[in-house]
Length: 151
Figure: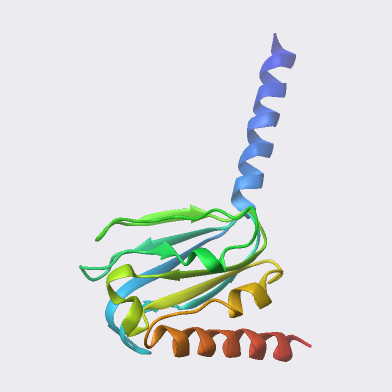
């Protein structure tokens, strides 16, 4: 009996250790932030597979959902409701583009890079309305700058 209890405690401890290595990053949905109006902050997040991004409705009137053309093959798509906090755990490497549906044309978009940006070319080829096009171009420039700085 004692062996079973010790074994159970060991399994539980290992399970918690694995969960402790996963990170959670918070992204705020804002009417006004350091980068302007109608923004996600931070708009570019780099994480490892297994990490979680928590979208917080800091200001009312926003949601978060994937841009379908900017999700890696086999990656999880998601759609949050207006004013809803959403937490997504990302397991599949690649680039995930996301938007606030009501403010998409105003450029309220963001990007999550999980591990290696394996689908970057596919994600760059996606089309966007209004200011979202330039906002995503800026995010890809920031991503390229972080790669260059890492070399």
